[in-house]
Image 1 (cartoon, rainbow, N blue to C red):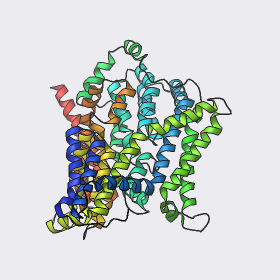
Image 2: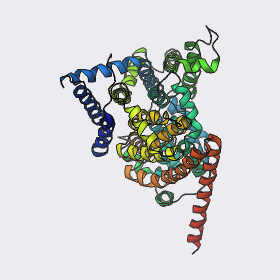
Image 3: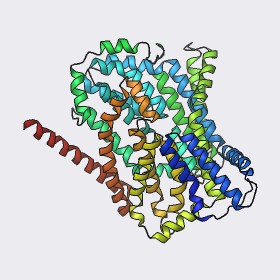
Amino acid sequence: MGLEAVEVGWLSILPPIIAIVLALITKEVFSSLLAGIVSGMIIYSLKTSQDITVAVRYVFDMMSAQISSHSYMILFLALLGSVVVVVTKAGGSRAYGQWATTKLKSPLSAKLATMILGIVIFIDDYFNCLTVGTVMRPITDKYKIAREKLAYIIDATAAPICIIAPISSWAVAVSSEIEGASGLNVFVKTIPYNLYAMLTIIMVLVICLTNFDFGPMKKAVEEAKNKSFDDEEKEDENTNIKLPNKGKVFDLIIPILALIIGSIVGMAYVGGFFSEGVPFTEAIGADSTAGLTLGAFAALMTAFVLYIPRKLMSFKEFMEGTTEGVKYMVSAIMILVFAWTLSGVCKEMLSTGPFVSSIVTNSKISFAILPAIIFVVAAFLSFSMGTAWGTFGILIPIVVPICKADGGDPYLVISLAATLAGSVYGDHCSPISDTTILSSTGARCEHIRHVETQIPYATLVAVICFIGYLIGGITLNPWITLVASMIILLAALSVINMVQKKNKKS
């Protein structure tokens, strides 16, 4: 943009504060981010003694610059959306469900299959929620598994899986917020520190393998044993999400494998591994979004070759699916554009990073407790706004410069992981979160029932995460932190189980 950064003191943190406060009040992320952007532009215009109307032009200049610098990321999300819709229309998900019906002979196998499918569909949380719910609900109904339990398994294997999958819409969104070409490498380093995602997966596995439940979920599970799902099934017929009754299981698996393999090869190619002999680990981090875009395109072309000759869909249907997929991602792309723009205003115009870093350095706050504090802040903000993406879009540009202050660099990875973990926990529990709503929709579970039965499970994990980040802040060892947190979680579940058994006897 050609604009020089200015120092405006406390006013430099006003734009993100405005965005946060408005998000908490309005529960709407787009207008909140836009208000933060505009306020930053007004501050810059006043500081540089320019006409305040110039701020309007600066808003669009900054947006244009951010879209240009993140163009590959936008292309990747658009192509990924197309892959999601085309695969769904081809019927691969339905084929999996039909296959599962013949193989799953017990409630245990039905729950485990639901969890596994949720893990397999890691590329996008929206795709995950609707597909897993629609495919598995008839099977879990057959074994009288509570729809609240189904909704929890779906929700707990959507965002928590996506946030630790290096090839997903979430990974690219996060890495795009981290300055430098190594954004994806930093994201990968956060995975073992992402305690909420890791512990949630363990929690789901325990819930699936045992008949252990507590809180409102326990009551829901008991009620489901004596419930007839036939009437509810009839009520769902007019509103149920229809998946085509065609396709094979490999119509779901092969495009996902093409996405994974194509992305890895694409990142290596763009980074010079094949042409310039750059070491593989360096090559895949050189320009990750460009490589991921090639991977998404490879997956889309694989789907084309797989579906069209077999007449799973016509050429026209395929192209309609690709355009629907782009529309499917518009909301996510707009959140990112607004978040990038606010970040650009703070970093490139108002010197927010250096100011916040100086405050933290001078306040003598111990960096050891910083990850735990960040986790709580991110969780509160995400729960209030109902969006993990909007939360880390606001917080990452603040967290990074704090950790770049004197002595804070070793805490960068764990602090970023705490930001992501808190964002996912808040999103997981929030009744206004898209993924929470889609999980209850996919499971055909009353939305508020899903929220109230899920919160005790998610909050137990979150409490353990807070303790884990205190441990991590002291040890700065991801594996010690993760193992200690796992032990504490399993111990907590054992204590709850013993208390329930004791109460039942008395």
